[in-house]
Image 1 (cartoon, rainbow, N blue to C red):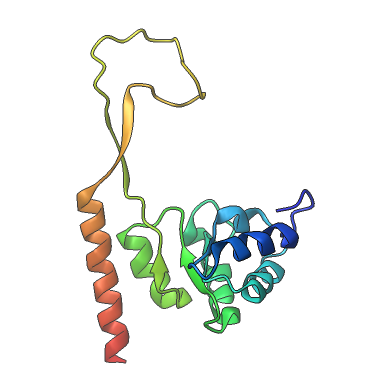
Image 2: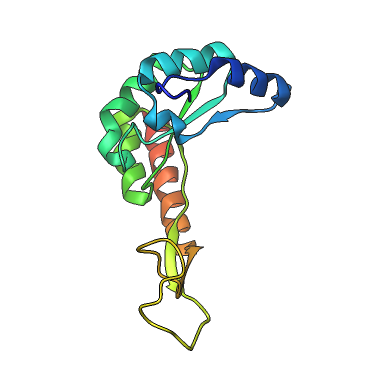
Length: 159
């Protein structure tokens, strides 16, 4: 994005040229752009394949109305992928409510790190970051999300 919150089209054109036909996803910078409808049209004009977005909210479930609007306006020319807070419940809610068919799942879970000795109250970096935990992908969350997505897809086929 440019400083004014609009898409840097000159830079994006160069990136699309460098991608040379590869699938390209516009990441969540989209969620802080000034005008999501304009950015959607620009992504389509550039030939992007996917826009990863939370609907310009902290969590995708809170951005459902914009996700639905983007999905409808995209006319299938660019895939709208919901991200930020995706889990099985979000998939079950968002798929029928928005029409979105693609979801970005991290399935993050905090697990204890390996340090046994701890020097408490001496933070080593980012405020609020727990140096004694690691974020890992949780297999059970992935399975639950897959089951939710399978159920949504099966329900669509029945219609």
